[in-house]
Image (tube, rainbow, N blue to C red; front, side):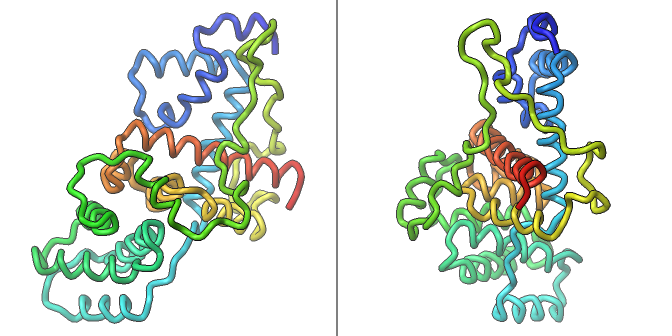
Length: 282
């Protein structure tokens, strides 16, 4: 890698890194996407870093993710749905599990009630059509005490967090913990201080790779659970439940720019978790 290689690109390494999730989710304007592509083509460090973020997002989606069991009450409610004459989606149980995970992330103490009230209200309104996105938005509004605000600030989530039981390991949920460092002065300004570690020759994460063990799945699940809201919620909705960033931000009533920035912080952190496991070990 040479200085000349990096100096031929208009975008710096920090600028490219900050845009990776927008780029990978197709949310960049074409002129900005072209600048990212140009930088990735010229910078092996950012190219490897981008590949690893993408691979970890796929890995999170392929794994079990942060699972939450459906309670007996909700299981009974599902049974009632199954025996009713109304037409329901075939994957209703999947929708309920997704709603349950979302409800737990918003208010763990009231999660069961939030899901039940949301589902029952939807059935009363239109028993023949349960729209997962509409359900998620309604559940979010109920968790935020019926707020009619179209778009919420990230500070709404921080405020809710202040009223939760303190985390015994506050450093564990700091998403910036694994954010890369860049030179801020000198001849290498704007470049990675340390090149990203290579994860062996496979270059992919798949069930056949040696690094993919139950330990790694457990470590990643634990890292997701420690993420502050809405980072954890966005990983759940986008990378595990396969919603678009637009739909996830809509469900959480977040500005889309805020949502993609939060998702990026979460993905960079999870990439760091995997990197530590692969290069250092559990």
